[in-house]
Image (cartoon, rainbow, N blue to C red):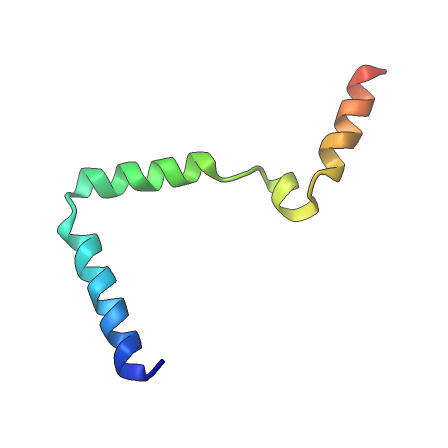
Length: 58
């Protein structure tokens, strides 16, 4: 991929992004934030959840 291709790709994405209304951009950002997993899961995987489940059972 040449530099020209990369610049073209970035420019097209920026134009598409800023052509959307502001409210639509905000709603997309909110949806992305809601789908984001919790801190423990992102950094340590499933292990903290297993430990919490075991502790809650007892």
